[in-house]
Length: 364
Length: 274
Image 1 (cartoon, rainbow over the protein chains, first blue to last red):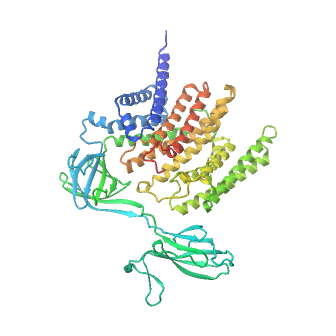
Image 2 (cartoon, each protein chain N blue to C red):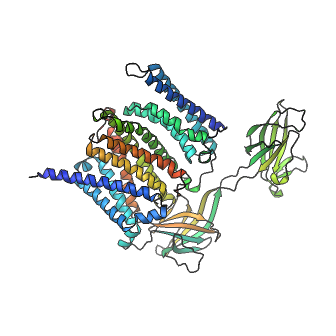
Image 3 (tube, helix red, strand yellow):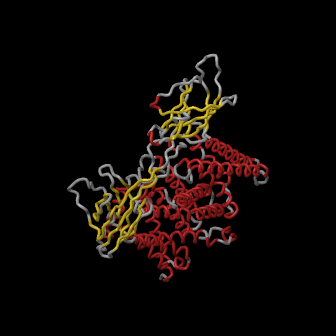
């Protein structure tokens, strides 16, 4: 006759085996789904068989917490397993099916378009073509979102000075004050020998013109001239002279050293940040809240997160595009994350703070 | 294969040379071992060269930082420079705190890691675009930093994992202990990297998990080490070859997450810029 302890052992062993098999199955599914792209993978991991899988996995973790005493007594192990349970429960609540089952009226992920100087409360399905008059909003928010202002911040542009030789050799140097490069001359006079010149970037002009009095190069925004640069050329004997580098459309000529210099404008400017100045007009709370929305700094209001997705779409200028997501279950997921991080560090690092104990090793 | 002529590349070539020299000295010290202990002078010279390689890689990292104006961990070129810099740190911690050796393997990894940024163009070119809006967050450094450190540790764990596949049950205790120490050392950092990435996804894209190919590969590698812990707990040293194989598979998945998910055009996704 079997002792009760034996039955407990069998249950524990079975639970461990099931959890390992479930984890291996998830590894296989993750690898397979990585070839499909995010959209199809999302669909797959939210399909009915996977819903059954997630529920089973959560149940197995929960049963593990009940069946294994050490999962309760060892803080690290408890946090790791409880963290997994929290992440799974929170994700289920935050999913589309979870919203449906809990009769949560909030859509999980939608898009919002607001014109500058106007307001909107309409949420559209992600990927909807709102330029079509037939597209209808998925839901209306109980408050209005007004776009007071929308703008982009750009990186400062740095041009390039291109140096070409008659033998088709090319050098490039960023058009930044103080940058220098060594180049070889290709003299047009066959009796002269090639020598090394040091080219140093001098002053950069965003819009250059000549001074009426001194005939020197000056910065003159009113002249709307092209960007140019001064370069200081140093010969091997130490002799220095200044030259002006003009843009390509002003047709650079090869000099006696067989060199030609061209100022190339910077590539199209990179966007550093998108900004939207948003006001939320809440008729229930009778208040107005002003926010500066930017990427990585979402607004959390009325049970939704609002994200700066993009600005100025081609089909509608002066518009901002927001991604709007439901906040249901997100807090639970994040508590799970904190527990997982704390648990893993506690179990793998902190409890071994005594070096002698760690150096014995092999202790689970 | 190309030779790059920038100052950054000069630093990389110096590091490659020093790491290779350190590796060769360490191998020689084992070949000319006396009474099964490595040749002392050769071993010491290997450590000194390795330390010089570390100094050179710190200078290389610092120079890149000054050139691009942000922490150089944005693309594969910068990530590989960072990995090569972190390897000697992990070697030192493993030796002094965990009592785990495999220094020759570390030296070889450090040498190997610098080959792509040193000699390959395209994905490994020096060109750096400014940081996109989504990358401008305080999470950039800890998320990628934690991942880089954990990857280096998991690379190192491949040593005892490979050895564990071939040693007999009687001699596996030390190898299994080394493997467990390294995986335990790297696993919390792998967890931190994964979850900080999820926190970042929530802040930037509106979702902590997007089932993106890179996310799926990183989840698979994290789960594989989780399976390793469970199987090890269930069986102890009984099936030591299986536990070694699981840890090795975890390292393979880490390499795929780092390389294949970015280099292959099979996996377009949110992490394609990396």
